[in-house]
Length: 285
Length: 153
Image (cartoon, rainbow over the protein chains, first blue to last red):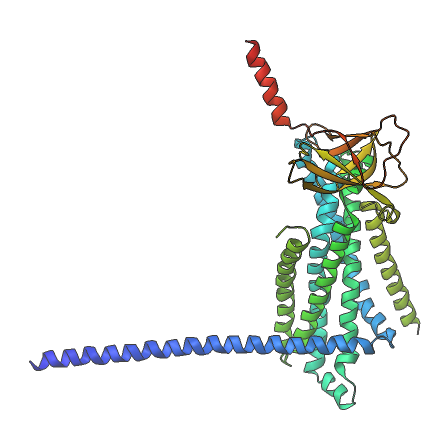
């Protein structure tokens, strides 16, 4: 009789222990879920406040355009080469692939439309924004993050200089201005690259290349929408890059993580927004 | 000081190149013609079937594009397709102009072709073209052809 009772007792104890264990791990799960939710909402809130401060800070950039020119140089001019070279090669590849596919249907003349439409509507804004996030966005985050880590931002505040107005706002404005110009350069160079491959090397008619393009692309629907896309991407990438730098942990590890997050989050934001913008502009959703 | 100067020059060049690229896109890629937007008048034509005609399909006269399709709707009482066209106002059309829907090439896009008549009167803005010929639907033509071929046997 006694061993029977002791085994049932043991089983009950084990069961109770397991139940407590399960409850404990569930509590732990909910705790971490709540923690993630709260911290991501807190970050969203901080980034929104940051954006509003930056947007109001832009007003104080206008009387000091020298600050803006300096940032246009480091954001725009230094991205010029990578954007134009990538645009040239993307256009050339489009020309080559498009020619191979279109020649199966005997429609090589439509090469110009294909190259120009895909560049102006999608590839120009998106690829140049991705390159911009990698080239300029990561540099912005690292710069701001290092300024924070070396307490230059706090130093400015000590001197009664608002770092948002002095450091962040010119960079943000430069990003928003530079992005559409870079996307336009990317698309234009790409169209010329497609022309180089299609017309000069593969023998598509020069007149057909341009006239089909001009007949089928609309200024309002295609060009303006592409520019709007690139402005939105410039806005979002600059915002993410500057906020990640401003919000980085002031350590070398924190800065490196923030730089990675800038590139990853920018890529997500660009591609996700691109779908939404395309659906709004070109789709009938 | 020199450093700032070169920097300013490079920024200026960058902005100039960017704006040049925007102009290139507007002019060379989309063939923007800012004057053509305002100087148009609307004419309407009724078709039994407007086929694959779309908004912004070209409207041509003697092979030259003189306008675009602005709107396509249905007359709910006669079940005809009402095609509104924007014609550039430099082109005056006789009021007995006829309209047909043709296809550019075998599989190309469809367009409205206008055939001017001999009338002395010009079509007013918001005028209606009475003589129309519907789009040729390829399936119907093939169907008729097959029907004739089988009837022969």
